[in-house]
Length: 224
Ligand code: C5P
Image (cartoon, rainbow, N blue to C red):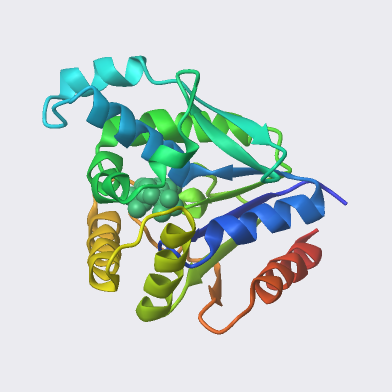
């Protein structure tokens, strides 16, 4: 069977990363959570107080950002490393979710991240999840899945996820964060969140994780 690129795009909290991780494990493929990269950039900009309206400052800051991944055996998943520091826990916090979409909308940030993602997918045999994988990063991906879920279900899932990481936030705050991110992500000029014309739709609202993974694997078998 030939190695392919699998692009999983869609809204936040539709189960993209978890699905991608399981699909990658089943196929012995690499997995890249591209949202983690934008989150790491947002964390760096926040810490360095980069003025995101100053293009020169953005470019200089980006030159100092190095994002890598390190496999964490206890989680059976990769942690995000920013300039040598494990920032996996920090980038998942709500204050980063509140900042990330503004940072991800900056074209220079996108160019840098997309270039790194394309390098990481050069050899194929990879599952990448994000917003623009099937449209911008790998428009030639052999399989593109566009994931959606009903807003209240996404918010509930996000609440549970944050709770498991120790952040107990009101549902209203989570709903508002998802709404704002959807709006910024869908309306930016570069790499907006958009279903690729040749993507296959996957509504995860009433599907178990096993069913989502099986859905994707079934489509992999059809294209291979
Ligand atoms: O996937 P996750 O929700 O962690 O992504 C965080 C944010 O990163 C998104 O809301 C979006 O602003 C940005 N992002 C992006 N392009 C991607 C992946 C994520 O703009 N390919």
